Length: 417
Image (cartoon, rainbow, N blue to C red; front, side, top):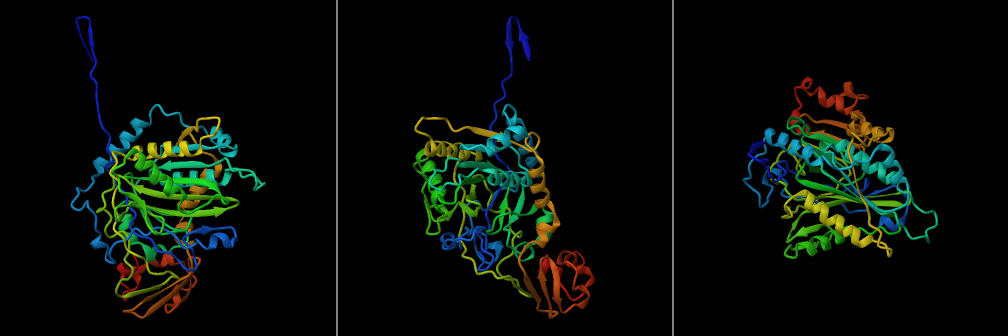
């Protein structure tokens, strides 16, 4: 700041924030017995649509991923730190809900939009579960549901598997850890995804009676095309959002206790070449997995050409407000939260579960693995080895086995990890 005569000269800093970290749906596998659609209520009505989770796929060899962003510059740790600093700066001035305010608003009837200002994936998945759990439902099904909620969050680098998946079948675990990604298992079904700050995660909560798989994706497409008429957005035959012939979004669903949610991600500022080697292809020579899975369909993916993740949030929030506005014209509020201001014991418990090795590594379905070169076979149930050609490991956890692979000269660790 400089004073010249009677004039006060104040430097004005103008900046444009652009996410330097990136996100992508790579692929997912649907299960025939452990469904990707998470259905806790026994209801034939919903079992008919219980086979859908988006596939964001390419060739079997994940080194052949195709996108229009090939050759993009690798993000550096300095850029990641800058991105975090800019997020902190931009969050100044938001009124973040206190713990008491969150509880009051979530448990009371009514519609609202909630945006997390945190990039902590454990907090964001926990707040989603908390809001869903406490959204009120009228016991009288003839009463119109009026507590639809829409949540938005952007996660830092993480790889998220579905509740019913086998982490070692899906991921190159060593690569995930070495590159600094959080490894997570979510509370809903579906396939494996990669997140970072180039994509937006959204969650639309409504009643089970109003649930329809394509509904919220249709609203997203309509909202984006209204604001950006030149975007060639549409739903494909599986209800996924596509830009031309390339997928830009994927979804998973949960139905429980009279409520449902549709959550998914939208690729906005993603570098689609950053995640080679994190996820395993369908098959690797030398190892065979039996995990009750079915083959997946591969599809190319693309970003939606918007300026920022926040632009997507704003467009979808406006669409939600227009769709669910009351005849009285009451404004649907937007609230903000993060783990510094909005925390309680229940959210902490969700986060604790998500962080635990027991949930991440030992909560998937039964599986069997056979190592062809050595002839070893291993059967695992609830994370514990129940049968094996290696007698000394029976009764131990498969997680401990993977951590001690160096003890077995005839096993190639890269096949499992």
